[in-house]
Image (cartoon, rainbow, N blue to C red; front, side, top):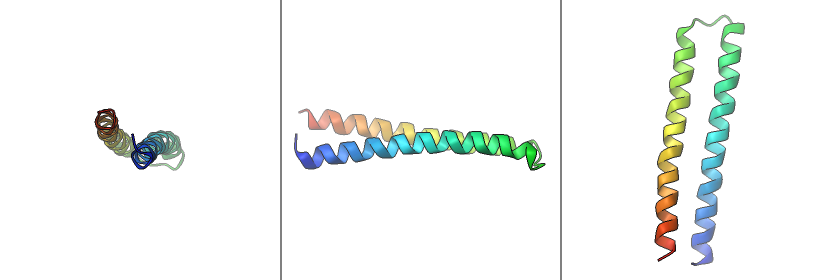
Length: 74
C-alpha cells in the first residue's frame, strides 16, 4: 500500500465520521429547537428527512471507502 493511498483512505474515513457526527448533532439540535421556536410539526419531518439524507450520503461514502480498502489490499 502506498502512503498516498493510505492518506486518501484516512481522509475519507475522517470525512465520513464528521458527516455522521454533524448530521446527528444537527438533527438533535433542530428537533429540540423546533418546538421551542414554535415551528409546526411538519418541520420535524423535514429535519428527519434531512438527517436521513445525510446518513444515506454517509453510507454511500462508507461503501466507497470499503472498495478503496479492498483495492489497496490487492
